[in-house]
Length: 203
Image (cartoon, rainbow, N blue to C red; front, side, top):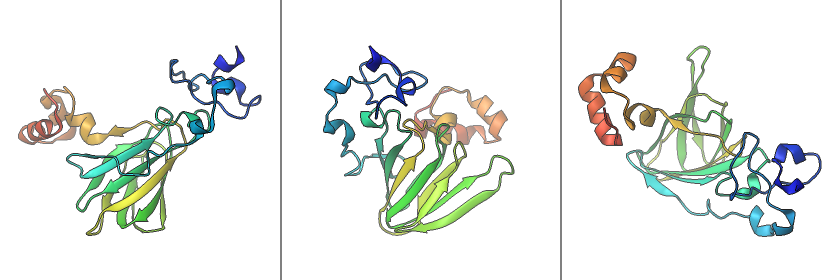
């Protein structure tokens, strides 16, 4: 019975809480898989060994290691992603509501930056192979390839489910009416319709 409790109830009584993905998620994480069923494979994941699928039109491939792909992360407060940014590719303006992000550049050169919520100050830096850049939790941030070859980066997050909201998708990949987008962003109606067509939105 104990193994069915959320990980927060067990933090002081057991070493880990591998997610039981057959049960529903809760505000404190997935219920624990029975320790009798846990194996070393629950703590191993090779999903970042190769690039993920390229996401158009951003020309960036994304592979994720969150708790839903890697159940051993449950309750540990961490997750990761791999970015392969093609030449002229970009990680567009986005936010992770639930986590800070630490970027490590494995190959190539990226420009990375974020925008302060308090003052709208932009903090931007060229980040080269072997270097780090941190994005504070919840702030709008971006990356783009600053070179002529594919730039590869790995990001670690301070949550097993950092959350993700991409600004372009929030505005143009849904049924938010074009006149509302126009009133709230001052983008022209023709441009809004073009972007809704590009991203698959309506309205």
